[in-house]
Image (cartoon, rainbow, N blue to C red):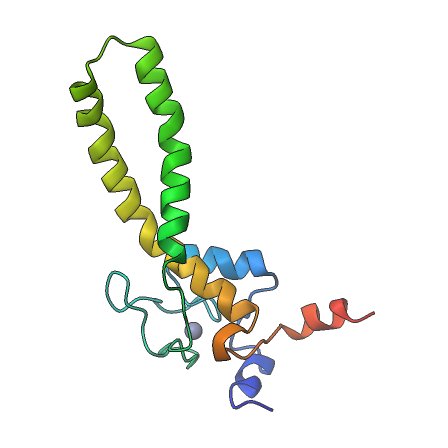
Length: 145
Ligand SMILES: [Zn+2]
């Protein structure tokens, strides 16, 4: 039994019930395992270990995936805005760039940390890259046939 199992079984650590719950905690930049501490030390630097539950976050390998998520979401938010501006206004290309570029930069930077938190949460939930795959007792019992 891993060293962190007794804390989870005692009820002091509220493990997420689903992958979506873990991802939600990651999106809010909270520890996906316990939801009681920050996940990031600095902007895109995760804490080495959770101060509340002791989860080791050095196993995370988010790499470029958060940037891909941020680009994808930013594009899908901005595409209808660009289309509406081009269709419904008589703005010059320069004026449109003056509106769109700052918006794109703010969205990209704003989405990076939540995307990285969600990616780390997903890796932890599925036990990737050295994370121990763990489930709450109730969810594990429901998953058995
Ligand atoms: Zn924690």
